[in-house]
Image (tube, rainbow, N blue to C red; front, side, top):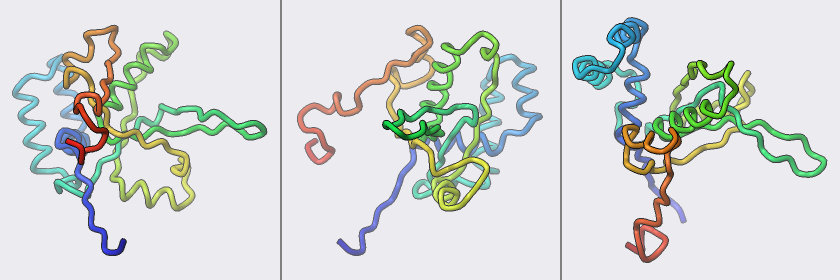
Length: 183
Protein backbone atom coordinates (compact mmCIF):
# COMPACT_ATOMS: atom_id res chain seq x y z
CA UNK A 1 0.00 0.00 0.00
CA UNK A 2 1.41 3.35 -0.97
CA UNK A 3 0.30 6.82 -0.07
CA UNK A 4 -1.52 5.87 3.13
CA UNK A 5 -2.85 8.92 4.96
CA UNK A 6 -3.85 8.78 8.59
CA UNK A 7 -4.49 11.09 11.48
CA UNK A 8 -4.04 10.46 15.15
CA UNK A 9 -6.81 12.18 17.07
CA UNK A 10 -6.34 12.73 20.81
CA UNK A 11 -9.24 12.87 23.25
CA UNK A 12 -10.28 16.49 23.79
CA UNK A 13 -10.05 16.03 27.58
CA UNK A 14 -6.41 15.04 27.21
CA UNK A 15 -5.71 18.02 24.95
CA UNK A 16 -7.25 20.34 27.54
CA UNK A 17 -5.30 18.60 30.33
CA UNK A 18 -2.07 19.04 28.38
CA UNK A 19 -2.82 22.71 27.74
CA UNK A 20 -3.60 23.26 31.42
CA UNK A 21 -0.34 21.58 32.47
CA UNK A 22 1.57 23.84 30.09
CA UNK A 23 -0.09 27.06 31.24
CA UNK A 24 -0.29 26.56 35.04
CA UNK A 25 2.32 28.52 36.92
CA UNK A 26 3.32 28.58 40.62
CA UNK A 27 0.93 31.48 41.32
CA UNK A 28 -2.00 29.42 39.99
CA UNK A 29 -0.98 26.52 42.21
CA UNK A 30 -0.74 28.81 45.26
CA UNK A 31 -4.21 30.21 44.54
CA UNK A 32 -5.57 26.67 44.39
CA UNK A 33 -3.87 25.73 47.68
CA UNK A 34 -5.27 28.87 49.38
CA UNK A 35 -8.83 28.00 48.42
CA UNK A 36 -8.30 24.34 49.30
CA UNK A 37 -10.44 23.22 46.36
CA UNK A 38 -11.12 23.94 42.72
CA UNK A 39 -13.81 26.63 42.69
CA UNK A 40 -15.82 27.33 39.51
CA UNK A 41 -14.04 30.69 39.18
CA UNK A 42 -10.57 29.12 39.37
CA UNK A 43 -11.61 26.41 36.92
CA UNK A 44 -12.99 28.93 34.41
CA UNK A 45 -9.84 31.04 34.67
CA UNK A 46 -7.59 27.98 34.19
CA UNK A 47 -9.58 26.78 31.16
CA UNK A 48 -9.56 30.24 29.57
CA UNK A 49 -5.81 30.51 30.10
CA UNK A 50 -5.24 26.99 28.70
CA UNK A 51 -7.34 27.70 25.61
CA UNK A 52 -5.69 31.05 24.80
CA UNK A 53 -2.07 30.80 26.02
CA UNK A 54 -0.95 27.21 25.45
CA UNK A 55 2.16 27.01 23.25
CA UNK A 56 1.37 23.45 22.11
CA UNK A 57 -1.51 21.02 21.64
CA UNK A 58 -3.70 23.55 19.88
CA UNK A 59 -4.50 21.25 16.95
CA UNK A 60 -7.28 18.67 17.08
CA UNK A 61 -5.21 16.01 15.30
CA UNK A 62 -1.60 14.81 14.93
CA UNK A 63 -0.47 16.76 18.01
CA UNK A 64 -0.73 13.92 20.50
CA UNK A 65 0.08 14.57 24.17
CA UNK A 66 1.95 11.84 26.04
CA UNK A 67 1.91 11.99 29.85
CA UNK A 68 4.34 10.43 32.30
CA UNK A 69 5.23 10.53 35.97
CA UNK A 70 8.98 10.33 36.33
CA UNK A 71 8.78 8.34 39.60
CA UNK A 72 6.77 5.49 38.03
CA UNK A 73 8.60 2.49 36.63
CA UNK A 74 7.56 -1.03 35.68
CA UNK A 75 9.73 -4.12 35.74
CA UNK A 76 9.69 -6.24 32.59
CA UNK A 77 9.93 -9.94 33.38
CA UNK A 78 13.38 -11.13 32.33
CA UNK A 79 13.80 -14.19 30.18
CA UNK A 80 16.26 -16.80 31.42
CA UNK A 81 19.82 -15.57 31.22
CA UNK A 82 18.78 -11.94 30.63
CA UNK A 83 18.69 -8.94 32.92
CA UNK A 84 15.37 -7.45 34.02
CA UNK A 85 14.53 -4.22 32.22
CA UNK A 86 12.89 -1.20 33.81
CA UNK A 87 10.19 0.39 31.66
CA UNK A 88 8.85 3.91 31.89
CA UNK A 89 5.06 3.87 31.42
CA UNK A 90 3.82 6.70 29.19
CA UNK A 91 0.13 7.40 28.86
CA UNK A 92 -2.05 8.82 26.12
CA UNK A 93 -4.69 9.57 28.80
CA UNK A 94 -4.02 11.93 31.69
CA UNK A 95 -6.92 10.40 33.67
CA UNK A 96 -5.55 6.86 33.25
CA UNK A 97 -2.10 8.00 34.41
CA UNK A 98 -3.51 9.73 37.49
CA UNK A 99 -5.67 6.68 38.33
CA UNK A 100 -2.64 4.39 38.03
CA UNK A 101 -0.59 6.73 40.24
CA UNK A 102 -3.35 6.77 42.88
CA UNK A 103 -3.53 2.98 42.83
CA UNK A 104 0.28 2.76 43.06
CA UNK A 105 0.36 5.18 46.00
CA UNK A 106 -2.40 3.34 47.86
CA UNK A 107 -0.14 0.27 47.89
CA UNK A 108 3.10 2.15 48.65
CA UNK A 109 4.87 2.12 51.99
CA UNK A 110 3.76 4.81 54.49
CA UNK A 111 6.94 6.87 54.03
CA UNK A 112 6.05 7.31 50.32
CA UNK A 113 2.35 8.09 50.83
CA UNK A 114 2.71 11.89 50.59
CA UNK A 115 4.89 11.87 47.48
CA UNK A 116 3.73 14.37 44.87
CA UNK A 117 3.92 13.06 41.31
CA UNK A 118 6.34 14.79 38.95
CA UNK A 119 4.06 14.93 35.91
CA UNK A 120 5.82 15.43 32.59
CA UNK A 121 4.32 16.09 29.22
CA UNK A 122 5.61 15.83 25.68
CA UNK A 123 4.22 15.29 22.23
CA UNK A 124 4.32 11.88 20.58
CA UNK A 125 6.66 13.33 17.95
CA UNK A 126 9.06 14.59 20.66
CA UNK A 127 9.00 11.18 22.33
CA UNK A 128 9.88 9.42 19.06
CA UNK A 129 12.77 11.84 18.52
CA UNK A 130 14.06 11.11 22.06
CA UNK A 131 13.84 7.36 21.40
CA UNK A 132 16.36 7.77 18.59
CA UNK A 133 19.17 9.30 20.65
CA UNK A 134 21.01 8.88 23.93
CA UNK A 135 19.60 10.74 26.92
CA UNK A 136 19.66 10.54 30.76
CA UNK A 137 16.26 8.80 30.62
CA UNK A 138 16.31 5.84 28.27
CA UNK A 139 13.23 6.53 26.14
CA UNK A 140 13.88 3.32 24.20
CA UNK A 141 12.53 1.38 27.18
CA UNK A 142 9.03 2.78 27.51
CA UNK A 143 5.63 1.21 27.68
CA UNK A 144 2.99 3.17 25.79
CA UNK A 145 -0.30 2.74 27.64
CA UNK A 146 -3.36 3.24 25.42
CA UNK A 147 -6.38 5.12 26.77
CA UNK A 148 -8.77 2.89 28.70
CA UNK A 149 -12.26 4.00 29.67
CA UNK A 150 -12.73 4.32 33.41
CA UNK A 151 -16.10 2.99 34.51
CA UNK A 152 -18.45 5.82 35.37
CA UNK A 153 -16.70 8.20 33.00
CA UNK A 154 -14.77 10.34 35.44
CA UNK A 155 -12.85 10.79 38.65
CA UNK A 156 -16.00 11.57 40.68
CA UNK A 157 -17.22 7.99 40.37
CA UNK A 158 -13.82 6.32 40.09
CA UNK A 159 -13.41 6.43 43.87
CA UNK A 160 -16.58 4.47 44.50
CA UNK A 161 -14.58 1.29 45.08
CA UNK A 162 -11.61 1.33 47.39
CA UNK A 163 -10.04 4.26 45.54
CA UNK A 164 -9.16 1.99 42.65
CA UNK A 165 -10.94 2.58 39.35
CA UNK A 166 -12.65 -0.30 37.63
CA UNK A 167 -11.63 -0.58 34.02
CA UNK A 168 -14.28 -1.79 31.65
CA UNK A 169 -13.67 -3.67 28.43
CA UNK A 170 -14.05 -1.11 25.62
CA UNK A 171 -15.00 -3.83 23.15
CA UNK A 172 -17.49 -5.52 25.48
CA UNK A 173 -20.05 -2.72 25.20
CA UNK A 174 -20.08 -2.80 21.41
CA UNK A 175 -21.83 -6.11 21.01
CA UNK A 176 -21.45 -8.30 17.95
CA UNK A 177 -18.10 -8.24 16.22
CA UNK A 178 -14.73 -7.31 17.58
CA UNK A 179 -13.78 -4.46 15.25
CA UNK A 180 -15.20 -1.04 14.52
CA UNK A 181 -16.07 -2.26 11.04
CA UNK A 182 -18.47 -4.79 12.60
CA UNK A 183 -20.65 -2.10 14.19
